Amino acid sequence: MNRLAPLRIVVALLAGALFGFGLSLSGMLDPARVLGFLNLASGHWDPSLAFVLGGAVLVAVPGVMLQRRLRRPLLDDSFHLPEKTEIDGRLVAGSALFGAGWGLAGFCPGPAVSALSMGLVPVFLFVAAMAAGMMLHDRVIAGMLPR
Image 1 (tube, rainbow, N blue to C red):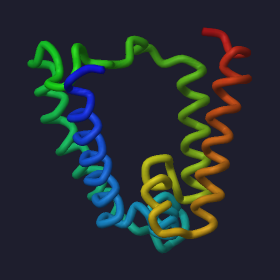
Image 2: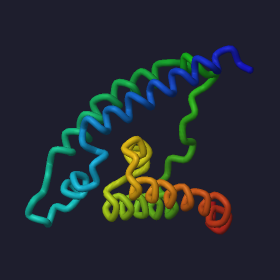
Image 3: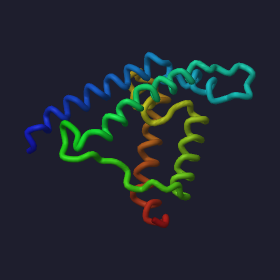
Image 4: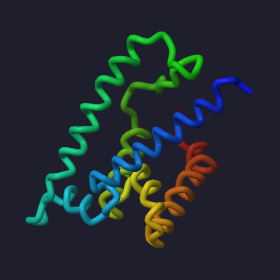
């Protein structure tokens, strides 16, 4: 076992807890608020989550700039970045499915997992359906799609 593995786990847990806390604090765990942001035609548009998205960009940009300057991460041998950079049908279909799910349910994967802490049955059902969809994709659909 790598001597950094326990530290990696602790850092991942702390980062995940901080991310979940930020999602909760920002209102991203409230499906009604998310749907109020996504539904521009409702006449009751809630623009507050635009500030959350803008704040995420302000946090991410310095991190990406730092990553580009580093030869390797502090707790691993190399960065694990996507190798595929072109936009293709799989990316567009996945993005459309993500957006449809977010628009219908008011949850996307990160906030849904964080919202499990609230103990609400609809959240558990959403996460179970999301996990089933991921497993279906990995075991069945991925093999049917062109690479």
